[in-house]
Length: 179
Image 1 (cartoon, one colour):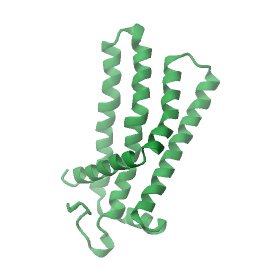
Image 2 (cartoon, one colour):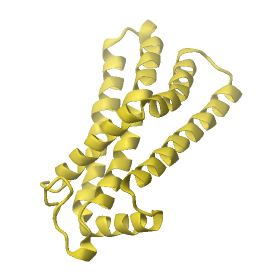
Image 3 (cartoon, rainbow, N blue to C red):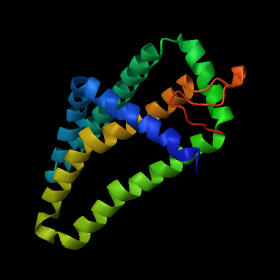
């Protein structure tokens, strides 16, 4: 556990900073899924519109990840191949911390997705559920979902810029050990 939290904290800190620094990019691209989710949940959209808009949402999310990864790699100042090699070495050297991030992701999913859905199903009157659900999913797109994608990229960044196992480094750029 002592290796999982520092990696998650460093990744989350970077994700927050990236979101603020690139707010127009992240929030702007997140508006497309926001509007799509609100419309599909709130109104009875034709199947073709729902499917087409889901494809659009997937493409926009892939675009956000590609752009964020590209910007992150540029930020490191490392060539892409070097960054990739350091990421692989970082995962190998910090396997528990890396896989522990997925445990944190499951916990975040439970807290930010399952709990609100249960609350909506049990507390909100049935006549208002579609509207409340539409607002909740719309709010999650530019916040929780975008931040989660950036957090995952932040994990990669932290492993890339962290200790280089090939050099025998054992501390992260934040000063904490991940071993």
